Length: 236
Image (tube, rainbow, N blue to C red):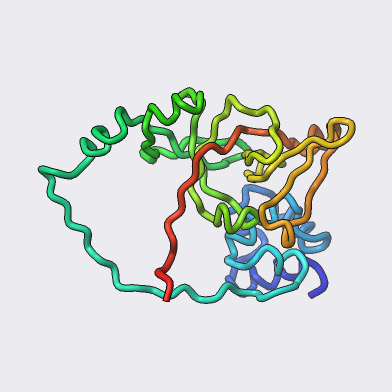
């Protein structure tokens, strides 16, 4: 298996998925998937596809490192009992003031679409302190592994769509050929847009000229101003 395309084909075989099935899932044509087999998985979609198939992006990209993540230890669930007379949203309101709901979004057809009946509650005064207007805020799930361990895969992120000006060292959400990505950003010579990952060793920097950004439909959605992640297991 010399290329990421070879490894993708193997993973689909292990999952009993045909190229057509996977193409439908990814909202591309079967010819796209066959091209990935021959030419390799596009870098813009590599993290997303690795996450879907539960393998480390580094292994899918280069064949280096372990193919599978170590198993997560499971613990018996514990029931949290609340007194409805003393617990609930009113407690949050008392501590933080008015709460505001931010919609969750997913990428469908290359665009962010609101997920019905799913939202995140944050204190309105926290958004006010950051200068984030409620109508400009939305939530997404961390789509890849490139920002670990700061932003693990699946972390809930809150995005301010009004803040697209690049400030070096800040994290931003981007759309790249219809795929969601999260990166630190900076500007290089000649207006080049540079993408950086928290896991810099496993995910090298990328640079895109203005022409490349236009050709690859790469644009900044907004600034990541909040995130939250629940640990999957207790430490020994």
